[in-house]
Structure formats: structure tokens, C-alpha cells
Amino acid sequence: MKQFNYVITDEAGIHARPAGLLVKEAKNYSSKITLEANGKAAEATKLLAIMGMAVKNGTTVTVTVEGEDEEKACVEMEQFFKANF
Amino acid sequence: MQQYSGKSIFKGIAIGKIYFYSKGEQQVKRHKIEDAAGEITRYNNAKEQAINELTKLYEKALKEVGEGNAEIFNVHIMMLEDEDYNDSVNNIVENQSMNAEYAVARTADNFYEMFSNMEDEYFKARAFDIKDISERVISILNGASTGSDIGNEPVIIVANDLAPSETVQMDKDKLLAFVTELGSSNSHTAILARTMNIPALIGVKIEESWNGKMAIVDGYTGTFYIDPEEEMLNEYKAKKEEEENSRKLLQDLKGKENVTLSGQKINIYANIGNVTDLAAVLQNDASGIGLFRSEFLYLESDHLPTEEEQFQVYKQVAETMAGKKVIIRTLDIGADKQVDYLNLGKEDNPAMGYRAIRICLNEPEIFKTQLRAILRASAFGNISIMFPMIISVNEVLQIKKIVAEVKAELDTVGIEYGEVELGIMIETPAAAIISDLLAKEVDFFSIGTNDLTQYTLAIDRQNAKLDPIYDAHHEAVLRLIQMVVDNAHKEGIWAGICGELGADLSLTKRFLEMGLDELSVSPTFVLPVRKEVRETK
Image (cartoon, rainbow over all chains, first blue to last red; front, side):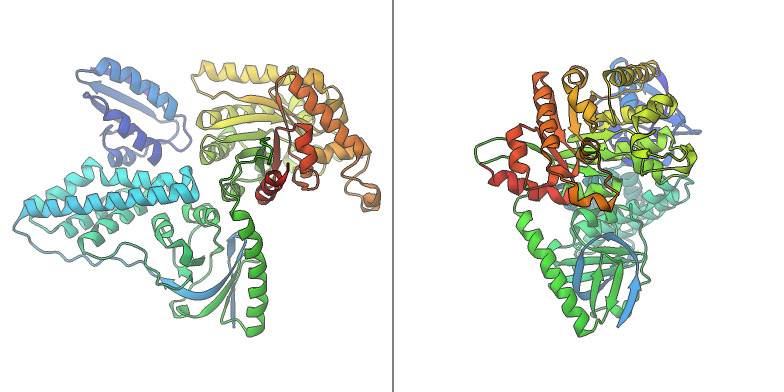
């Protein structure tokens, strides 16, 4: 299992468009990727659940990656978060 | 005749019959089913069809209104493909033996509630997206047509509110105007209306009894006339005809290259002063934004705009332009543009006073806030930065030092930014004369002809008495422009014009001869200048 924390710096938080990109990205890995924030959790492949977390600017998101390609997935997800949120 | 006023979204005139558009909310009947697997297949087929329709809408929107505005339909597709959404529908069908229409409606209600209970306005508004996509699936299941059918005659659409999907799928040839009660000037639909060139009014208290009545939408004054008198009708018909003639002439030029008969190319960009001008930039097919006046952020605010406030605006512009060049000019306040909260004080000679870069270099914090916002936004598109009122190489060196500091700060906190070209305005005779030295320090020049002319001729443009001797084509100014272009090219950088002179069609030929690489003009001049370029030998 791999994990990282990320503080959202995008003013709009995790809004629809980048959340959609996140889902697409997450589907590239066989590992299960979970987001946790505001006491809620959602799988990174589920758009509505992610939007339902209502992650706003400044919120810390914990991303957990578990599975065969977790090493690669974790590194790339962290890059993805930096680039998009 | 009745007369109403609203807020105009797009300046234009429409004359025609009113079509009262009410959302065809689908009736959902609830009934037990026997064949759950068959019902799920029925749902999956409807969902597939909905996704196909949304893909077509996306493509239509992409062509008509640009990538940034079309993106909403991709999000809608992803919502329909969402696992939780589909699990919920399948569960209701399988476990409760309910029909697909009911299962979709229940699922939509649950997600609608989840979003509408959120505090944040943005996420709250997503409830309508859920409703929009679900209605589409239900109407397919019901065998109803999903097109927003508005009949065969061109009409003025009157509605309570319109979803972007409704706006885009209406047959554009039959759309004369929109008049809605709800909606804001920055809503998706408003942006779409502007991009599609359709007069639109919002904030008009609408009545269903208007259906079928003759009406006029005057987008210039924001007035909506119902049952206008003959005389007024004729007057507006004449105005409309005039408007259409000039538009038609130019629409043919859309998508065409800015190239002369002998093959010389030039970039034609647009000048904008607000986010609301973006639609006009897209409509008029500008290849980029050559001057984004950032002042409005400061002038329309009662406080210094924060980094976040600025970032959101720059990002929106960069994203909407989707990779096309966007040149943001840093704060150019002072002279005739004053803000109270800066306490700049009254000056005897403000045009030559404490303004623009002079303020920025004296108050680096204000400057840095803006630079950080621009650099952050540069990760989302193709942004360049341009600095106004330069008179010396030393100023440019100071600016570059500050930009480097801001970049270093962003690097430390791991915030990304794009490749950003740094350029300067050439609007003082000093800058023009030392443009050989300045060209070694920057990536481009943009000539601000309004100020350059005023300073070169020592003529205050606000003073009407001087109008007879004010010569916009003064040889001194034209020679300075030539000098700037030559010096730019010697150092391998490009030079353009972003002042009013750029749109002066009687000079287009001369500018091409001078070797200018770019002309940035107000959006409505992009196509006229293109026409002139294409007719030049």
C-alpha cells in the first residue's frame, strides 16, 4: 500500500472537469485508488462520489493506492494532483 | 405594445415570433417488471444513445463555441458512465423489480439531493447537471424526442431558464434570440449565446401568454418589445438589415488565413478588456489575444484584487483560448484610470505621471501578486506577459529580476507554470528610440500607438481644441514604428501593434510593408483587417 497527502491549491477545488480527468487517469491502473478528505472517502474511478466529497481549495486529500502497480500509480497520481488541483 | 427591460448578453437585434419554451419534464410512470435483465438492457441501450447524443452535442459545441465551453458535455458523458449512478439504477431494477424510467428518476433524485444540499455554490449547481442527463435518458426510454424542438419557423425563445444542452441542441438557424427570466451573464448559456452571436436578454419576467406574439429584442438597449407598432417594426427591420449585411460580408472570412496575395502572413489578434469579451474573440476568429487589459480587475473592485481572484480570471481566459496566445498586460492604472483604494493622489500632468509600470516597480507587492496569478494561470494555456510604459533598459532588468523571484517562490512551493514570453509595450518615444537595446532583453514588442502618438506629437488626446492638428498618420510616428520593427527583427524577436492604429485599414498595406508580425485590434475589427490583408498584393 502506498499513500500521499496533497493540499488542494486550485481555487475551485476538485471541480467537475479535473475530476473527470482524474477518473480517466485512475482507470489506467489496476490498483485501487482511494481519496479521503473531509471525513469522506471515494474511489478515484467514481466521478460523482469524488464530486460528492466537495473538496475545496486548501483541503488536504489523502490518496491511498493499493495493488499490483501501486509504485508507479502512486508516483504518477501525485504528479497528476500537482498538475491539476 | 408592451415593453420590458432586461440585462443584455449580446448586442444585436432580433425580430420574430415568440416561442415559449418550457422544459418538457418527462412523466415517469412507476411499474413492476418481470424481466429484470431485459429492463437493464433497455436502460443500457438508452444510456448508449444518450452518450451518443452528448458526443454529438460536444462536437457541435466544439465547432460553434470552442473547447472550453464544449467541455461541459464531456463531463455529462462521464456522469452517465459513473459507476455509482449505474449501480444505483441496476439495483433498483433488479432488487425492486422496477422499470428503468423509475430507476433513473430515483437515482437522479438521490444525486440531485446530494448536490443541492452542498454548501458550496459550485457543487450545488451540479445538481442541475444530474437532472439534465437523467432527463435525457428518461426521455429516450419514453421514446420521446430529445431534441429541443422549436418548430420550423425562426423564433425568439422565451424561457424561465435554459440548460447549456438545451441551448446547443436547438437548431441554430431557427434561433433569433433568447429571453430568459433566470441565468447570469456568466452562466454557460449566456456565454454560449454570445459565442453563437445570438441576441439575448436575461432577468425579464416572462409570461406564457406571450407565445406566438410578434416581438423585437434590442440587445443594444436591453429592451424587449411585444406586439410592436408598425412604425417601430419597420425601423428595427432596417437596422437589422444593415447589421446583417455587414456581418455576412465578414463571416465568409472566418477560418481563412491572414495572408496577402503574394503570400506574406501576419497574425491578427484581438484586444480585450474583460472576460465578457472572450465570446467576441472566438466569434470573430482571432488567432489569439494580443492585449488583455488587466485593469478591469482593479477598476471594478473596491480592494486590490487578490492573487486568487486574478488567477481565476487569467485561467479562464487561457483555458477558453485553448492553446492560442494570450498576452496579458500588467496593471496599467494611473492617468485617466484611477482607483480610490490605491490613493494615488491628484496629478497636474497624469499622462506623464505616476502610472503603470512606475507604480508596479515602486510597489513590488502589488506587482508580485499579479505576476504570481499570471504565472500560475500559464500552466493552463499559452500566456505571455507584457509590461506597459517602459522607458529604459533598467526597468526591464528590474522587471525580469522580479519575475525570476516570483518563479523561484513558485518553484519552492511546487506550483507549476508554463513557458511565458516576456514582452514590452513600446508607447513612449524613449522606448522606440532605444528599441535596439530593449530588443536584447525581451521576447517581443507591442507598439501602443495611442500613447506613442500622444507623446511623440505632444498632443493631449482629451483636448478637443487640438483635434485639427492631431494626425494619426504623422510621419514621425510611422518612422518610429518602422524603427521598432527593424530593431526587433535584428534581435530575432517579433513586433506588433496593439493600439487603435492597428485597425486603421488605410495603413494595413503600409504595416505589411514595414514587416510587422502582428496586429492586435478590437474583436470586431479582426475580420475587416483580415479582409484588407487578403486583398493586399
